[in-house]
Amino acid sequence: MKRINLALQGGGAHGAFTWGVLCRLLHEEDVEISAISGTSAGALNAAALKSGWVANGRTGALENLEWFWGQVGAITDPRFSEWVSSLAPTAHLWAQAMESSPAYMAFDMTTRMLSPYIYGPSMRNPLERIVREFHYDEVCASDGPDLHICATNVRTGKIRVFAGDEIMPEVIMASACLPSLFQAVEFTDPSTGKTEAFWDGGYTGNPALFPLFHKDLPDDILIVNINPLHREELPNDSRSIQNRINEISFNSSLFRELRAIEFVKRLIRDGMVKPGNMKDVLVHMIADDALMNELNVATKTIPNAVVIARLKSAGEDAAEAFLKNHKDDLNQRSTVNLTGMFS
Image 1 (tube, rainbow, N blue to C red):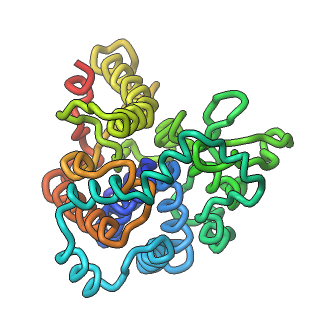
Image 2: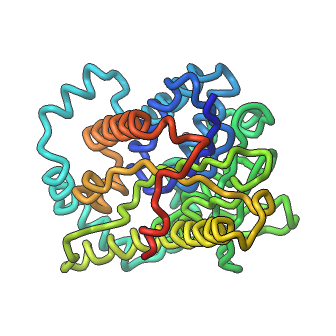
């Protein structure tokens, strides 16, 4: 049995890529998911998987993920999703069309110029209805993978990782709360007993890796990355510049933790730290930067059945390629060259 931890990034509707990855991993009977750290869309995927897993194992996890994305806007019948996707233009043209539509341009301008607080309490996150339908006795259960949800404390600027009985609808809503779109999510933090305000966890941990360092968990962390690490084309208009700024900022916390892992691995390799004194984390990553480079903030913000279908399919293909090339490496060695990444 190959035991792994999952680290699931946030990225709005692009989280459908992670859905595809999870579907493929859940079909691999000899791969066990021990713990999950998730942020924003990653937190939603993680909670759906955990709840379904506790209810009915792998089958329950697959069914619950399909239910969740069906609520978001996916066409969950593969016959129809493949048919609709085949008739649509390429992902790049579809993304451009969405970004250039008058409706999206008006929406984008409004979010840049106006605070979500001007609408009062009526400005609610459309995900709230879905999130409140999760079964929290299963999401918070001690059975199944350990679950960690990341959010950003607005006042302190620090990351807050929720786990176990701390996880409630407000926590998942906070993890996915973009401050330009929605008012901060305020609730009583179980650890302090004080009312705290939270924003999207992507600013401080996208996702947080350190909860997965516990000695009882496996050494392997498989990161599902949905914010492109690399873009060859230089952004030269305001929307593409803002999009790249968001990608860089939402990857910065991940890079910071990966750099720390690389430093510890170097200390262990050079004999500066005795083996066993610090965890020698084995890092793996599943991503599709080529596809994500064709998409944009519009496809991330506005769920679209065609884009969701293509993202899910791409996630399944990326996971299939990873398992084909690196399944034997799990629990043996890292498959990400961290030294090369930071050289």
